Image (cartoon, rainbow, N blue to C red):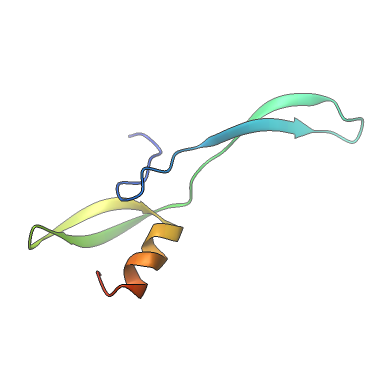
Length: 63
């Protein structure tokens, strides 16, 4: 299963981890995915949604 939001398409970001001596090593920031049941074409469906998209859906009363 990929770490990608089913609604917004957000995926992991990458960058550098910095130690105290400013030594750089690669790291990854994963998306905060949550399991949610949303209505898709009038049918309830379980999807993995990012926390930000879940908040937006709740605000729009889509859940």
